[in-house]
Image (tube, rainbow, N blue to C red; front, side):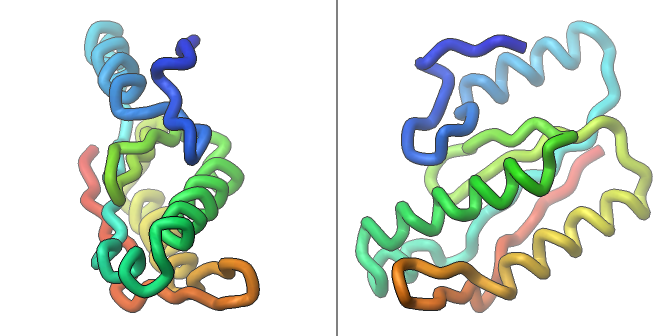
Length: 130
């Protein structure tokens, strides 16, 4: 689905919530079956307080890159704030569990900002729907 510049989040360079809503509407209108995972980076405010807004932006950018490169077979969207959305082709329960566990493993590893290793103590909490 082609999107204009107004449907991209400029920091993370992924489609934004408006693009997600347009895609969701198209999915419903064409009777497609998809699996949607909504991710929320827990306690993101604390990350911003500790590492500053630039550090928080770097984490959002890094997490978006992880999602884009890992889930090339899914659509990745920025839900706003500390939220991201993944829209997969229909997944079985076992496939869904595997994907959620991969995200949890990545957030447990954290990421590097400059020379600092940043961890996500509570990770990214996923809410799955199929």
